[in-house]
Length: 518
Image 1 (cartoon, rainbow, N blue to C red):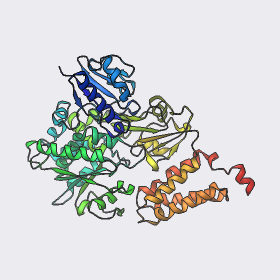
Image 2 (cartoon, helix red, strand yellow):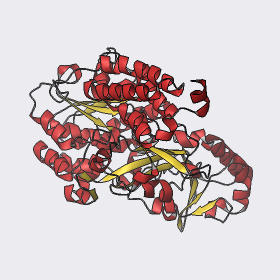
Image 3 (tube, rainbow, N blue to C red):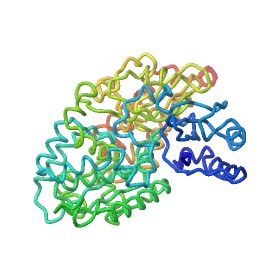
Image 4 (cartoon, rainbow, N blue to C red):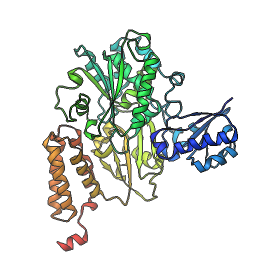
């Protein structure tokens, strides 16, 4: 048996030196006259262990990590090809605590298979959902997705089935499926991991959406900062088309569906669905007023489903295993699993897929291992740059859409950024306003002007100029932005600003030096 060595070519692993490790392993094989098959898989998501090299042995897969090129020679000396013990030895990947605690549904194949092998995808449960879907009535597919409780994983948490049902019942000679892969939030990388590590699951999910709603064309809108994901998705679409998954007869059925990749130009606001549609049409990425909803008048004025990558990638297992299977995971109205992305000043950063319901404290302390610096955790921002800052007193909050909303927070795309006690929350509040000012499309006054005035006001606060007056003004600005902005960019910027002010008031008090100067 020729050994198989798995070396990730996921962007995160590449940034940590995976290509150098792969070249060193290839050179060592040649020097020793050994033969092995090298598969460039995606990452399993434990970035603190990347590059993580795995070898298929008679006893199963054995992992090593984090591997440096300088480790390779001694790993071969220790019997790498048969899973021999070495200081980088981690054992069976699914027994590593970070993975053993997870419930992997959407990410079941990510980091396990060759991302561009349709055969490997099939052998590991792929296309089972689509096979069932093409034999079902469209309304029954939509009902299955609705009954599963799947909600938009891009941040809004809107029930996916309701959106699909609206498009199914909308009149239109042409309908579209648009995948929002403009993953621009800080501490988010789940979309990228799926596209680089298991692109066929996204293709399958989009195709099911097309069959369910009568759409025959799909677009994956990917941010330009993801060149590896763009390349993987384009290659996977070509393979799927040649394999009969896409085209005039999906899996030999009467259903037609095809898709293509479109690349964004780097605007954060194009993560908002109507701005994204304008960009897809070749227009400036500016927010549209609603109504009409995209489900009624979306891309090129036609009924359009717009879903996030994870929402669509979660659909195949729902169709395969059934609505009740998926709905059995989670809590309250938050059903299924959520890929939590743990980043920032944290010991064990990475992607952790689990059912809704873990507390924030369990995620940060138990799974994340606390801060990388070893200092106390001061704040955790959940939901990207527009998410609220939670102090330790709120660490008992369960990871659930409604539970976070009740504490004036939001889950968003489930990105978590950890800060230790050296963080200055006044500076973080200023950053939120500055970020909004830079990224605003400029269409609505509360976002365009409110964020600019917000930066100026926080600067006065930092300088100790009438602090009580400045806090009152910032609070009023946030209220106007929250309820007056056309989209979530201006509407959600108040979350980080006001949470920083409310939970960390000491950081907003003038320093003794400033008070003395006054």
